[in-house]
Length: 474
Image (cartoon, rainbow, N blue to C red; front, side):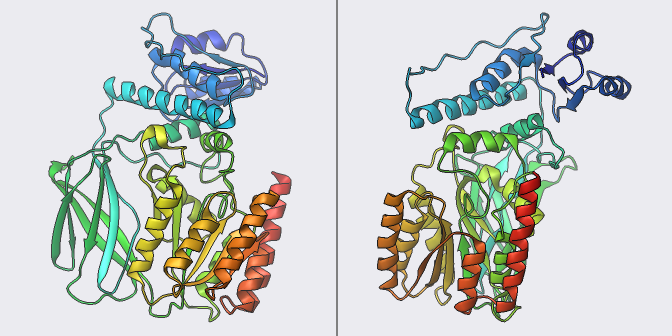
């Protein structure tokens, strides 16, 4: 059935005369009253009010963006108001007759990124005035040092999404996450334990601190006060925020470092075009983890003793733009939350995975440097380069890797043969690389190795069955 994007009051009055039962109407806010929407719903049509107004002048650009990406399989009608100046067309991008996979992906993702950036830039130029935002990420540390990272943006927080949000709402939210406008050169001050340190944001708006406390820190969460001394809020005071950094508990026996993409949640990262489109269609409420992951990760956190409070870290090639989405996802799914170390990417690079290995190696080594006496369990998947990256970590830090679990998501015999060689190489160091078909298999091995309590296996199996039921009814 047809779908209509309605940008103005005039467009609404025109469409309701011909939109029949089964049609879907996407409305700019304030183009229709609640009573009018109720009457439309009575006709059998569906109505979705967009979370933010889309400028009518950009109607042509919205149409090209959506049609170019194939975000709707239905007929899509987009209002082109006659009384507004249309945005200048974007330069056409070359398309080959028989493009390769990489060329198809680069073209689609590049067009998506470029148009999203230009759309939001023009919207801001049209008069959107948002206050500065200090966005701290989850940090970590040890008894003698804390590490925190964050970003300064010129836009307020994104609206929280729900499981009822439409594809359009998800698309608008993704636009905002990816093109939140950074503030370079802003002075940021951090205060903790009587110490005051400062830095300035880089060209991407990012800032980073290593903070040395005056006395050794206990395990648990520690709060660091952040301030932009040269920027004032609505109350006339400097803009402030609070960062959180975790120090592992004294009861912790080992740490866990996990990938996210195709390890914790399915993103189809080996098919980057599908991954890009799926991100635009879903949110943290509608995405689901791999079966049994939540219970397995809780078991690893609790350890064989049941209350070890082993720390979890997540290292991913996803951009920092998706930090809020990923934290929301972990919390909603009951997966233990820990510091996330993501990538600094520009808008056009969001869906590219260049320098994937270097990023993960650097971040894992940063984590290991804070805990030289702690062993780690590394968890990843076979879809990209996790096995090779983890094998290199074992080579560099053989005493710090206790176990490697790799979810097998690539059945290619050539890939399996390469993994067999990695397994042999890792075993020579005394560590193990386990190729696991699912979380139950990995949990059973972890129980046999004394990493988790044997009685937690039932919870992992139950979690997997519950996930199977959800998927079968989805």
